Image 1 (tube, helix red, strand yellow):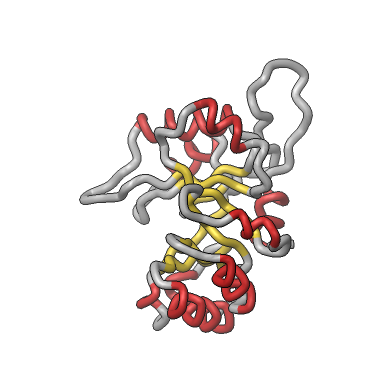
Image 2 (tube, one colour):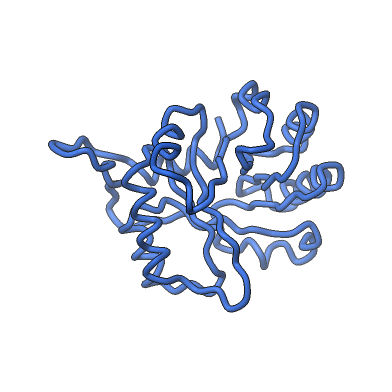
Length: 205
């Protein structure tokens, strides 16, 4: 099983709900939201500084051939945390290539990712979705053979979290039964992380 998905399961213990249809909220002795360090291929040097305190590493992979090689180097340089690949385009052969490179989980868009990804039961599967996804499609996501959902929006200019973001995260948490991850700015504060956790976000990128 994916080490990262196992971590998500550990911090998201859910107790039964007596009434209502809203997703049960995680129960923990103290708030725990997982931190996933997102890196570009050029960030191999000074790796320890980038992933310090992170629960997992995530490499953006625009080009599979060089990305798989870099992912292998990163997972060997920092083996204490699981490593995943954030994919843009991948084929059946590419999935096997990622697994051989030591990939623990993948983040992928629904539109251009082959269903062959389902054949690999060892790699964690995180579906990347847009914030504007309809309620009907969100409910359909609950029936898919994936482990988590990542809300990924454009982060341009001086991006910061707003009340609208919090509303979106709360909406997703209410409709989804999957683990929920969110892409956020790097300068997020402890109070903002607390608000995200209370809204139902299990991890941040």
